[in-house]
Length: 233
Image (cartoon, rainbow, N blue to C red):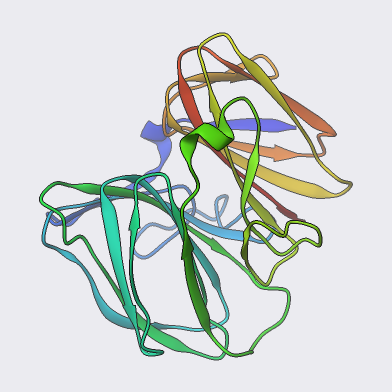
């Protein structure tokens, strides 16, 4: 089963400094049919104006993955971490028993991110944060695991969930395949470009909810950059 969720059907809130679109219920947007997808709870498509950002606030018991589409985001937290994550790269915060953090766009232009929240397999634990570059060339024509709690994904940023966040770059006309394990949920969003997934066109920033699929074939209709979450039911 695959279900297309066009970008114009997403929840939206423009706060001036933040132009946010929500694939799932979040903050002032509530849709009982879009409360999450498996362990995936949040996928926010955020545009953050230059010199602005999210002031210090708390989290607990959530895996928060930030994929930077354009620009850079600067993270600071109550553990003493301070870091800047650039276009195409990824940061992960395991909130665990509790952490306070801020996320600011210190750049001169708008920063655009996907903010992805995944429910951890267990509550509590010491909070952590990490960031890692993932060169675009390494994702050309194949999926690269960016964040994972699955054994064997040693090069990915660690998360505390039986889930993966993957990136894929395709040139127009090229194709790639992804195979799911049993009883898995998937959610796919093109960060750039349009793709066809098992015959369904998915435009830039559309969402595609996937369930009970053994595999997917992704064909790039134009040069494309794709993010996929593979998670438990």
